[in-house]
Image 1 (tube, rainbow, N blue to C red):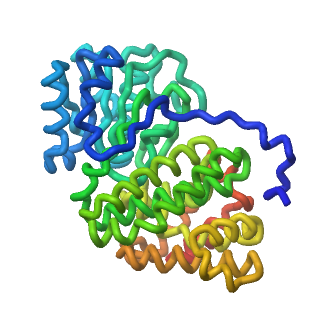
Image 2 (cartoon, rainbow, N blue to C red):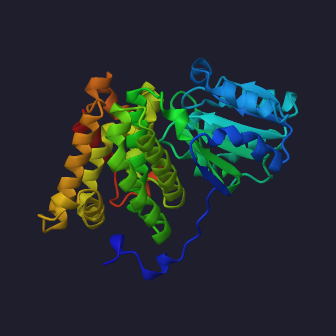
Length: 395
């Protein structure tokens, strides 16, 4: 049976991803060679103050300068970057006459790097690019180096910008896909446990929502989502609790990238739609926002998506599912597994535990309703009362 009453024509699809993916420990040490191949001579390194404090940027700069390649550093990226920060970065890039961009960090740094590459010498403004396929001019050469195993931004054609006080707005275009993604798991070994946990759950959500995406679900994304969940379900607890285990770190980084490729082509849905207002209004990290609503969205979706959730349960919980006959039972086991996993990796699991009061649920609901780009992908249609009910269940 095809899910969501999809017709057989949905096997027709277009799949886009990053041109070159390098997955190897210490691959960041070869960065200069990739810059030379792309004919970059004056590069802008985009990162955040936390990366600078850890000193992760310095080896990158030294490697580039030895090539020799001139490096300009922009390290003022903020979490959920607001337009003002991106505009500041664009002006800085133009003043320094850059001819290439490197993103180093988590999703916010990588998203910012994409927009700098796309808009530094463009006649378009940031607001001109909001939406899908609005970018009209070629971008600068772009290399992405993730330092968390979570967002998958290194392989997605999406940048998220915070507009106004709390609303997150997407810019979606294949032009945002970088030339090279360097997956160097050694950059993640000192990542704090709570960040490893939150970004890991985020990546698992990407795989789950890609696999159940209503509109663009496809066989290619399905394969990636399944492999991503296999790798991450086997490794996330080790990566959180034994952070210097390079094999677990490598599995999480590759898994996050595979999940990123999956959801870049079969988009995420209601978990992300309900998570975004938590970040926008309360500045809760994105991965944690996802984990807070994940089990409750899955329970809501169960009547429409039990077959697909059961398929994922068979993959990551084979021993449990061998004793279960129905899709409903397997779905329940899948949700229970994720609920317990969130606790086992040390994340809060209620809105109350992160300081959200019941009086805020209405405003969260109204903001979530604005995420139409994501809600249309959800396996079960969701209205205002449904969203409020999920926030109440998470409270």
